[in-house]
Each structure stands twice: as C-alpha cells, then as structure tokens.
Image 1: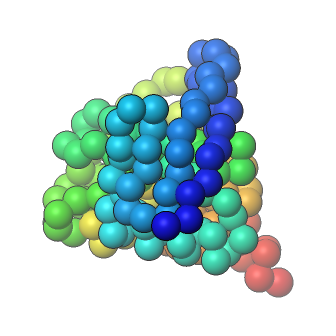
Image 2 (image 1 turned 60 degrees about the vertical axis):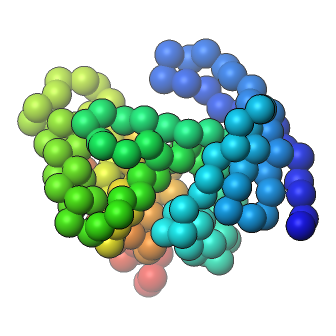
Length: 162
C-alpha cells in the first residue's frame, strides 16, 4: 500500500489559517490524526475523475453541512475547499440537494457570498463549492454537470472548448 504524508493548509471563511496534518493512504481510508475517514465509492470515483482532468484533490477531513442528512468529505482542491456528500440512493441525494439549493439560494439569503455558492448533484453524490475559481468551476461542471444554483460556469466551459 502506497502512503504519502501530507500537510494541507487552508483559510476558513473567518480568515483563520489552519493546518491539518494527516496520512493519505491510497485505499478507501484516509487517516486524519487519530481518526480514519472512509472514502466511499462515488466520492473516490469523483476524485479520480478530477485527477484525470489534471486537478489535485486531497481529502482532508469529515464534513457536515445542514440541512444535508449525511456526513461528507472536505477536500482541498486548487487552494480552495469543496465538500462531497454520498447517499445510499439517487432519490435521497436529489431530495437533499434540492433542500440545500433552497437554503443557499440568493433569493433566500442576503449574504454577499451567496452568489459564490455552487451545488452539484449527480446520481448519489452532492458536491458543495463556495468560490469563484474558474478552473474548479469548469472541472465541477465537466464531472457533475451544471450547478443547481449560481451557474456561471456554463459560459466558462463553453469558452474553454472553443
């Protein structure tokens, strides 16, 4: 089993820098400190697709995001963070993705960052991204399809193909 030790540095929304150390194992498990994060099949396939597209996703911890009903995986990608949430069924993922999109819709929230929220749902996987990095947006569009809300990436992806 190939093992790589890594340190991931990211900045939270509040601007607090945090450093997470862990052991990344190329198996379905990732050790973070003393705990182990299990990477599910759809998330692992999604990460492989991003890697094949030339991106470098690194799972770093477990993640929760209300109103979603499952625990997800926080992933650092191109100096940003995305979150993946895998469900037992496509129907449950679609139901929770709709609830999440409604909660973060610019109509329902008056936060200045609400236009930067991107929510993707494909099969039994939901991906949440808060940001505007065009490389990430194009990669998410290519792997997951259009965002359920705030979907400026369609023009980015179309321009990239010209």
